[in-house]
Image (cartoon, rainbow, N blue to C red; front, top):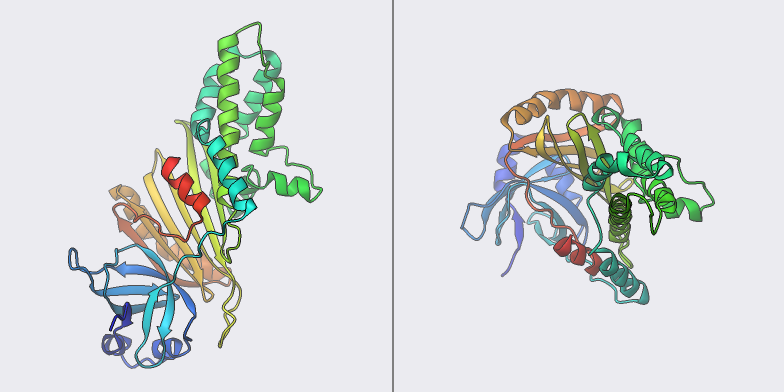
Length: 361
């Protein structure tokens, strides 16, 4: 009989060392409940399955899986069998709905893909072209470049929140709500720059044409992120956000994915939404760095991956401080880990629109 992923009750009892808390939490699981899991230890390589260890909420759970599980992989699991013999299975992805809205989104994505440009590429090009642009266009381009946040600004909660609000992804929703765009909104600033770039310039045509092409590519890139965030008919809310960063060495991009799921309404219900944030950045000081931060059942956990030994050490040393800071804010820290190496590919339930973007952009 196919069992998918079975909780190893015997090993769980041994690791609990007499504590009833893990078993009590597992006993509260209900058939059909969807859980977010993180693979702390994957199945043996080339074994096709076997023992593994999952993090679910604040618990570390030994399991046996019929299929391979990769260390660092994030999973959505449904409870197939509860009680003394708990069986889990990968929760099926929500099938993309075929609707006029979905078709329109896919067509819009296809139209944007050929011209879209990475944010950091555009900002580097505009910085280089500034001396060659007409005065009005140069002023708008200079504002776009100068308003790019720095790592120090993104390191604070308020600064990160403001950067996300200014990312351009939320521009149209603000306008639809009757709110004015932020003066620092990237997409709005880029649109103003397009307005003052001459369509058929009489002086410095090459620079103006290149700047126009780059700015249109930046707006297209933000548009793709907005379209990726549209998942018709899904219970999962998803945002794809890119934040440009300005450092003394140049411009870079921080990539953010945010997922939220509605609270479980069974017995017992969960309090509030569960959410996951995935982050990727590549800055001169850190090198490539990936982070996975999840809130599940009111427990906040974080995992970091980097191939840079010095960065991995700094992160590992800072984890107790991070846990203390979360506790001071009334949050419950779960498992915090620093991993040396490359982060596993995220496997999230995606619509046809997101699959199209993932394979082309």
